[in-house]
View 1 (cartoon, rainbow, N blue to C red):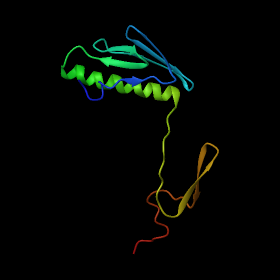
View 2 (view 1 turned 180 degrees about the horizontal axis):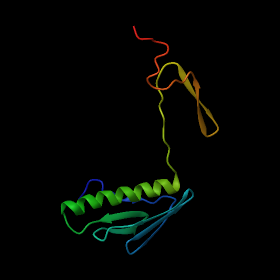
View 3 (view 1 turned 90 degrees about the vertical axis):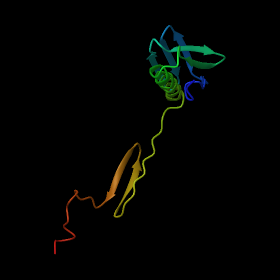
View 4 (view 1 turned 60 degrees about the horizontal axis):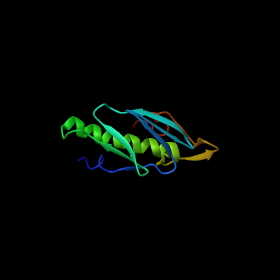
Length: 120
């Protein structure tokens, strides 16, 4: 079996419904839905989503891991949400957060503007 696909996906606080090939995940952050490929089977067992495939063909293996990853991401998104970290490096400016917005502070010049460094 696939290394990723064989791991069960813990449901946690999310409400998960599996009907035929349609999986619905409902959590405090929202509701997500996924129609699973006909080759892949998804079942809810003991508070975990279990993804299985019918054979060991290359296409089935790729769908197996993909489906498991999509379901895990759906549960994370519906329960915890996502977070992105932005790293800004450079000299001559800084960034401040005001509410939900980022404000660039300092001298900003367009790329290729060499006013400070005239050609010699």
